[in-house]
Length: 422
Image (cartoon, rainbow, N blue to C red; front, top):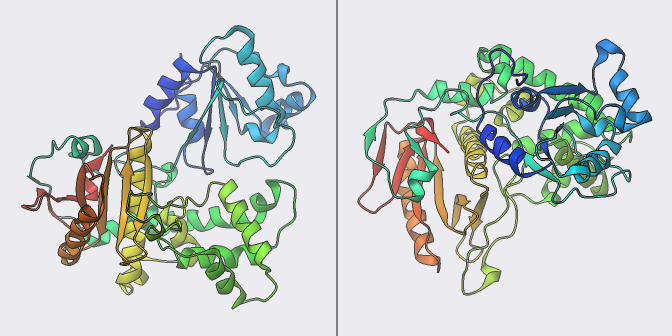
């Protein structure tokens, strides 16, 4: 019998976990703190070891530090929560998986990628790595799920009215974010929680990840710069320049190192460029699009409220794009696919999102908060379709305020983000 917590909401990753436990000896679930890794893992585990358990004076961690076998002895699947606190556990589990070839023995969770020389084997073939994110709108119950990515790939989408979407509601969803414990909170409380989350990261995690002392103020400036550039294609030199406008104390190497720490803490998820097949590969932009793991982090870092976002609709559009691309990443990765963006350096043509299945099929998506930009988005998609040698399976505009699921005469779908699911 699993250790599922009362009130647990099903997550999209649940099916992937079930399948992987049938195939591999162990799985490793990585993602930002507080995104729900532990509760989701308990939904599949029959026993658990908490390495960060303060109530017993970290006894299980101390046992693991003496000999990892002292904790790898419970009923399978056994959950080891925050395993990176004792990196030797990785090799111990890899060895255990080789002992009898039994599947589904261990579930590892980690909110940071350990920086250590103590891991001697990748775990390939024994330990399946998977990434977990905050909740998508479908998981939190804020999307009706009337159309799926699978439907789009199979051209199986029917026109349907979905109802009016309130702009203030969309802003609330951005500020609240997809943190499981914030789902029922009002905007003010959710924002306060996110700001506290960011402060804790600054105070503890940026140094505890590898024991290197780091400057909180420098990291805060980097976070603010990244937040101001959310959902944009901006290189590291721009971030360095932005940070040094406030302080000349942050060297380029320091800025790059600090950004690397944020990646290891799973707080930023850069959206890489799509390698479309064109006549000249030099035309295809290579720069990644900047994202925080959840748009609420941007709001927490910059102190953004509904009122401030309503006064800056242009920036609100970037945060809406971030919200949509968070969900698209979750949805496409449930099919073992990937999320990209596209830019043609010659013409400047940009496509917000490319979702690609692992068989190479892909769809091109433009994201627009309001309906006033839909024609512009459609024009971009048609230009892209003409440019691509291998044609996309579908062209789609994801909108915030559109009131229906529609297939236009030009074949482009228009879908509200609040009607989408995997």
